[in-house]
Image (tube, rainbow, N blue to C red; front, side, top):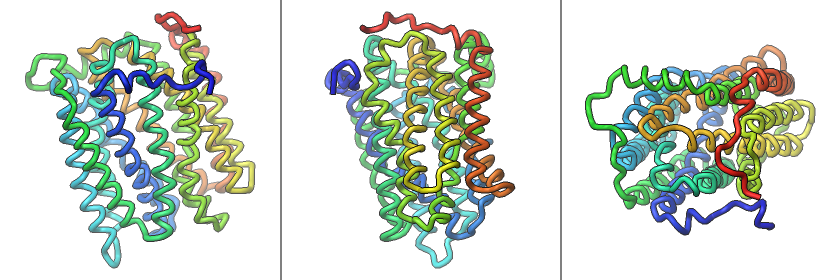
Length: 410
């Protein structure tokens, strides 16, 4: 692959802690990707209800807001490495409970909902530290490359995770998926434990609501970053199709396709990541975010027009590539311009923006599917996404006109 387009893996060779974090993300992402499809599949199998599958996403809203914000405050006040490690251990405990429930003669749907809420709570505490740790273990000159490599790890694990999860579900059931996820958290925690401590960016004291207000005040001054949240929310709320995948597999009587449907966006993301060297030549990051989000919506809309699971998988591959391009430029704006002493709290606010969209999107897509049809839910959401992003982009002037302060690489 030509050097001008392939991903720069230099940070993996140069920075030991980044390499350990990369391995941890790659391994734990494998198990999490498998569990990600196992949860809605299990609910769909137990209930056969669009709405009850959509409830999984709706349940994430409130705990994500509360714990994402608090996790952001903690990320600025505690050792971020320790925060990641402790939450990995808690994740392992939750998976044991999920595994036990799945082994019952009649697994309780309410227990799956409870575990989902707890997973979101712990994830809300962890993700700000995970997102804010990168600029502390990688120098500024390597941030673009490290961000692409980190995204590649998530994409690869998200490809393998759903694919492996689908195979395991078809062969042995969801219990084996949960057991696999548990094992990956053990490996991930081991790698994180070997990283060096990361001193807090602020003096330790009792976290307060004033610190969240301070971060919100800073965010209000950064209309370019607000613009990235707006575009991402439009794309995810209007065109997030993942909750529909179990029903696509059932409609086409193609259980084999379930893992591939979930894996396809991650395959597209991985392809975009490993060819991401070209992104160094782009200076209009804001416009790239808008155009990529519009392409995501277009791919989702076309998925509703084709009548083959193979073609739908292809559309999801294109959608995933577009989403990764948008994500790479969002990450670069964020890592290059946000001060370290507010980075953790900004990661908490970012988590709310980026994770609530899919949660609401799941509920929207299943509701529209129930009121209209499965294909119509894809088409309506995708068209609405593309149109709204292209209309909103130029109106978000600070984002639209954002240019990288780092000189583009030829």
